[in-house]
Image 1 (spheres, helix red, strand yellow):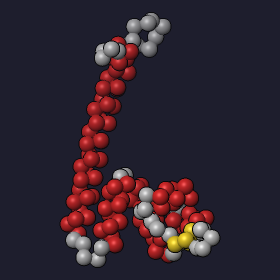
Image 2 (cartoon, one colour):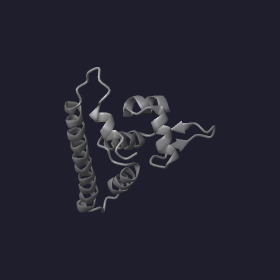
Image 3 (cartoon, one colour):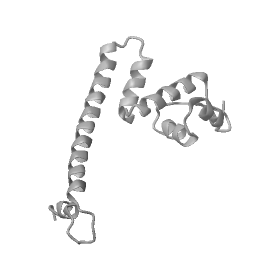
Image 4 (cartoon, one colour):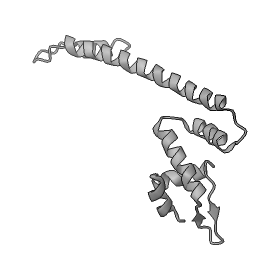
Length: 129
């Protein structure tokens, strides 16, 4: 299968597929003339990677998850540990975003938004200067 077909079937753009090949997350076969030749297993791996990336796993986490996926002697505890760490990172990001939202909401409320130059938003942003 060529990269166009694989792109269509996996839902990933060709550029992403090439990148995953460059960083050795997938290894399609190469014909004598150098063209990539993808197998069904490559499509499955690419779909797996696409789903993992959509859930926000890093490239290194994807590499770990792919290794675990391909290891039939793996322990599910290893997979759970990777997912649990990622979930913790998501929770931290959510907490940071909530804090940012609260601060910005307060600043927007404090700003009169009228014709006067006084602006608590700009005053707050310039505190570190």
